[in-house]
Length: 209
Image (tube, helix red, strand yellow):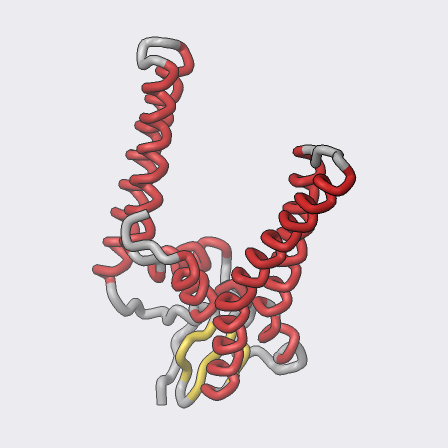
């Protein structure tokens, strides 16, 4: 994907939950929840812990899969029994679920720690949350997703034959991708051009003192 780094994008999404406010920040779970004040040190600690998990968690999962493959191969050789695809798939699912569970623990760490604090703003509406998320999504990510999606649809259309039923369906899907991603880019351009609105991203007029 063009200029796309999954780890960096994941970090950006996590950081986007913290928005500058006066001398510190406010935390909004998933960029949508109530705005809860946090200090700059707290925000840096949360981000640092999440980044360390992303750095070591993925490699830990890769190492676990490698060890599991070695054990499965050794066991299969010793017992003269073939390891079924179902067993391999099941092991991968278990590891993936464990990884996602730990990821969620680090992602929601701020929410657990500030749960008893008094919010200074209500939860965002769904439309406002989508607006803020789009505003903070890099153009390279949208364009990268568009290129991959359109290429995959066109490749499928070529393999099925452009004049066949499935081929035409994939061509229609490619066209929908073009329209959809173009609209997303246009919406983001309008949001970026609008700049600072009368209503702050926090959901209400704020003093930055």
